[in-house]
Image (tube, rainbow, N blue to C red; front, top):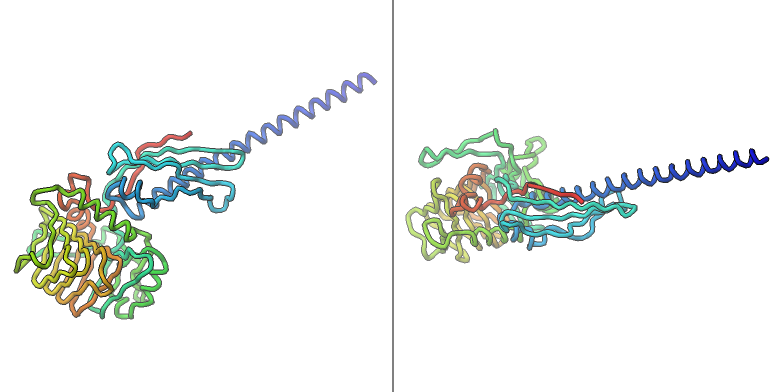
Length: 380
């Protein structure tokens, strides 16, 4: 009996030990799995931060990202995993407040699993524009008058060796949307509001002739608030004096017969500050053109670079002559009206060369929106 009892006790001890080690192994496996989930959540948060920034681009990291509030710091649940979350816990500027930043993202999972990523970000190279015409408004659509316009997201190259410069299609650069919008609501409203003739005039990425479908795409790029911050960054970064300083131009101080606002060799940042400047003659310009309110183009305009309309009225872009923009236009509303012709052709070289280094922007890393890249990271 004693031998049997000892054997039973030994078997029970072995069984208990086996169960304990099995439980410990299971717990270890669970903690390993949830730790990986927490790390994956932190990575998801980092990707969310980078995508949010790069859909807009930045001119100044501190102004456009850190103080703007575009990066949410609320707890976010990973889709499909209700117990897995991430949160941007800190977002600060780096040593160079204009170009560098640091983001700290915490990922959490069950069993108190937690991983923290501290990531250094830096403003990178040129970012292709969202489209030939970008509508920065989240709701309003604006109007197109008649069929005397063309918006083309296919890339055009400029040859400045000829006078005037010649333009030709360059298929080596992928096409952008003819018109880019902030959300599907604006995309649908704009697309449905275009006549057949107007739809045929909006070409680029996604354009088809059968069925007729204009190149209007949702890109979630810069909002009007983003654009206004970028304008402020550009103006604040301009040199105080010299030939590359900001030109404050209104209808009272325009010189005839031809207005030269920057050249290919020396592109400028030009701001039209008058409430509704009328430009009766010929305009040629390279760089960045900022229009504070409305504009009336009664003559011929050729612009190579980036045009930003801050606050046009519903019919505030009046075209009585012929206007051509090679590069990109950003505006809350298209607001084209009048009996003239306007052409907006996407031109990557005009943005990366003329707009980015306008007003001595080359010495400041450029004035067009740039993406960010990860330069280093640590995990804890």
